[in-house]
Length: 296
Image 1: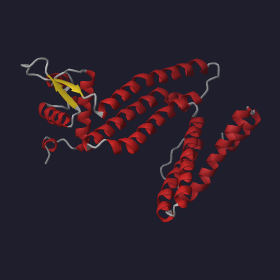
Image 2: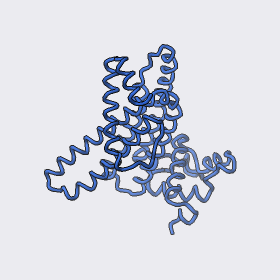
Image 3: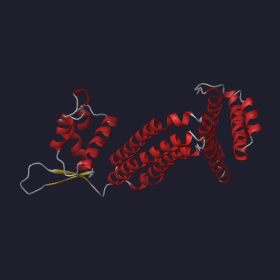
């Protein structure tokens, strides 16, 4: 049993508490362990999570892994000042994410403001909302790429990699919640355009997998390639089928008939290709016909 487990700290909890401690030290460089405990004591009782034993258990590991470093204000000082190690990848990534948390809400606020001002004039461009949302998605992809393709090879310590990944996903998940809260009432006003953007992204993923299949085929690994490509295509097709249903009834159906998937996803692409043509050509008659076809 590890020292963490001894105090009832399982893997997920340990990562969460570690992130809380690292965040506090980042916000309060040079603080002491006593400062962290004092901050916890200010919380209401049901929100307190880090007691003395838990704190020193996690701090010991963070120092051992060189995530946290200690300094003394003078040689005889009893309390040691805590800092996040600037040479640790967690410091670098946390600094990046903190900047993203600071600047991204500014964009969300501006999009909201633009929507409210232009709604009266019926001139709002829905792509502003969708591009803003997809920027968060692209940021997630960026961190996934770095985590799986770069850091998995260059960061040797398993604990650091685990804590780094936990920090990335928890921070980006929090940003996802903030984005939904800021833009949901805008998106509701233009569900079909939003779905169209998602469909476009799914089509891009499918194309990329298709390109990979051609490459794998040329290396004679078809037997090993087919199960994984079929798995990916099944997810994409099923998701597009769900979106097809959602575009017509605003009902996201988790369970759908597998036999309908191909027809539904094909119709999905046709619907949005038609919609794109209508919008690009500003054809009111076609727009009315299209909405009638979809039962609007």
